[in-house]
Length: 386
Image 1 (tube, rainbow, N blue to C red):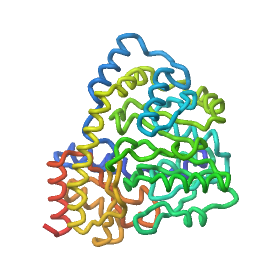
Image 2: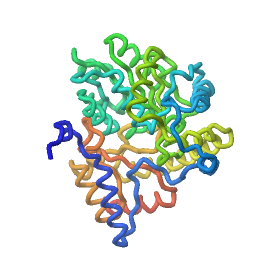
Image 3: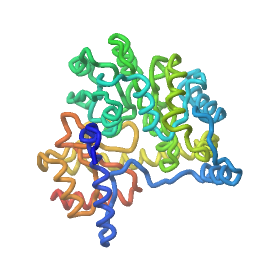
Image 4: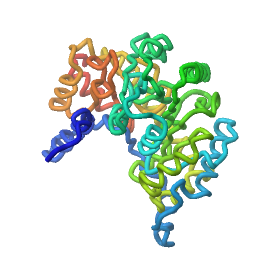
């Protein structure tokens, strides 16, 4: 069978291969500690589950408007007012089948075939594959400076006459970094100066550990595509529900694309998500955020003591990005051996690109502290640092 040339350029997501191997080992009776997939052990809050069950019982199983339920779009807009002080027109919000669909929609609406999008890396590996699907060119911007912070010099060096977009994530997967208001302003100014579409991946918003909620890109500009998801903060990974905030002049184009690409997001998931904005549910989700902070605060110094220093400051999400170069120069092989010999599954940096990919590993603190303690004990034995 003939396949499109683009399929040869779609890179595998290494973490999914680790998942498959970890599952095989577990089926063989091995004790496996999975710290690789971006899905904490909390599950969906019960109030959301019950709202979804009620939606099914009440027959909410048909199509909704392509842009999403009006009441859900209003609730999302209200969250931006409460969390970020942003007065957002609900017409700019499109509810999507997951955050990935939101980003695909944004790329399809604003990036032409053959043009380039700047992707600071390390970053989420699917982003470059999304661009391949629409015939655009991903351009890696390696962040090799100390702390892997956003570098305008690196962006300028990577930009060409074919550049048409810039994607930034805050909090970032895999580093957990959170962009400051000043960094968002610098990015917005850079994009405007060079005529680039600006994309903001904010799917981990709410899961941040600073004293105040971090800024959104919408705090500095309306000329931005913001992609969001119910998966992370609200624990709704399998419900496949997200949203996009589109620039004011892109509403019509985005809606037409949504109508043709996916018709509408899942109806029952949208009705269930209305419960996510109830004060008691939001409080439950912030309590989970606090538990994740406790896990980070336990695990980060343990990794440092094992000779796995962090490459970036982890102020959000639920990942630690560590340097394993004290034990070799091939993180992929090291992760494979770690899994086979100890049952601890983590993700090699090759998934995330950038200058550190061969010496970096991502560890997801998605299990409770007692499980993390066992993982640390196994890591200590593996590295010889008991």
